[in-house]
Image (tube, rainbow, N blue to C red; front, side, top):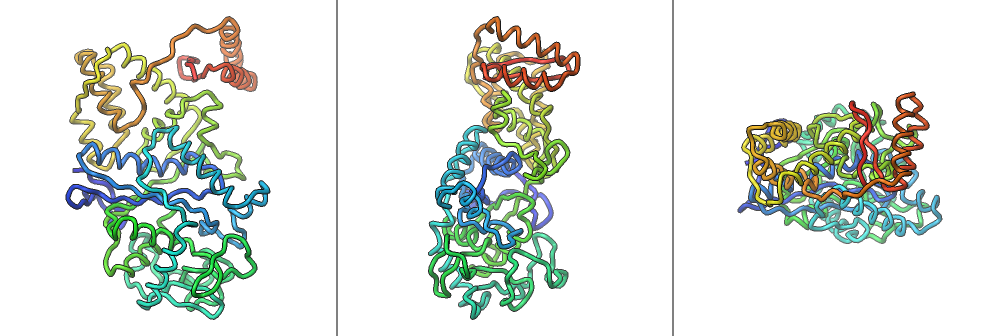
Length: 454
């Protein structure tokens, strides 16, 4: 049995299941921009859980929403990000949403994340959200205002704050939760289920309360309850969603069905890059495409993320990505030299590490120990690595292209080595990019540079 840390109970808990099946809901992307590597860490966590459960013999159903109606964050200050991007690119907002949704799926495929069983779009489930809001009003957990908005009554849920620890009596009036124009709600911690359109003319819908658009939290409640038959065994998301999104989602969902809708909450920690939080203003947002343009295998990102526990804040660097790329190449070379058998052997230490809160760093340490152990035959090594790769998803049995370098490529490699030796980093980077354009990827390690075919 696999045990994972449950945010609600603050401890390890075996993954719930019913008749060997596990229902999982994972908060999906907001499709007004490309998903960066920090976003992808959360989706990799969901993929790791799915892979581990399937290897444990479970049947898994995963639902992941696509937020494409604009109002998708707690820092909403009047500017709709999707509409702003549409104006910037001079395109219809739904064209923008479809463009970035397609690129999201492309990035998932690049790092071997299994597709979810369904990707419901917020824009296509408005009727379902309206039905859910109507239920909350009828049960006394929500109220409509004269201005045409609908709010959830936060004080109607006694256990509010159980996930995050943020109790209502500690949330001070004046704290801005999502919107800057909520003067018509009864209590400062109430949140919008439906917002009146006001002056907004795009991405608005008709409702019993007037033209408007849904609040941020209601889409996940409506989708998860409907598509998972009111049984969410495990809910996955980034730690930044714990409050207010998951706290509010829990209140809504529990109010609909009268008991805990989600049996287990799992959160992945933040990802820093080169010591700083990724942001547009800091200029350090890293995409999968950036890795490819740098000549790195996209799966080097997957390996780098697996080197850290999902519940630990992680500082990703180009150096760690280069090292992961080198490791991937070495492991694939080793597997090719260890034979051609597709037999698989389960290693008890690897299985135990995953069973205890998805300890992927321990898995990778074990693989490195097996790699170096001369007492283990190469056939057994290959079989253990192949079995582990069903979980890790690193394509370790991928054939390595073996063709000679051209004279120009050899010259560029030599020039780059000289540039690094003389600490001419700008020239080193220029030559790296030039080599990448010819199909050669460079990785730098303690023993110098190494190369591989892109």
